[in-house]
Length: 136
Image 1 (cartoon, rainbow, N blue to C red):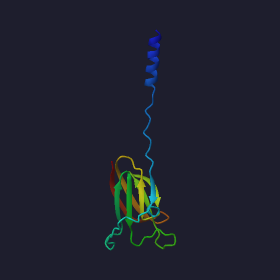
Image 2 (image 1 turned 135 degrees about the vertical axis):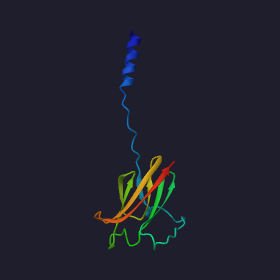
Image 3 (image 1 turned 60 degrees about the horizontal axis):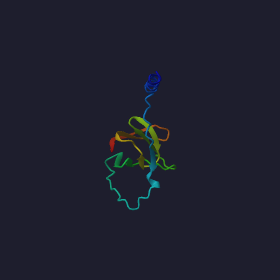
């Protein structure tokens, strides 16, 4: 009788366990101005044809992003000031105030990255780029 009660106790405990959701992956965006790039090679781009050019590179779980946006500045004293709205997998994640940045700590899998350039008051410049990255 004692063993049957212990069996039912374990059965009850095992059956009442909740499925816990997987923790959300924490990521961060780091401005490239804070990174030492002395030994990196510069990228030369013809800016005359493209109003919003985005280049990205995946290294591990980090995505290095560089934006070239003629006539838009991220400086406070600029007349044509802008910011970038970063969306990952359809969710707004960050407002970025620099043209080059790193998205750190994305989880494994394929992620859809969307960048939209807007004015400081969020009025659109109608400049948007999307691309997919795959984190191994």
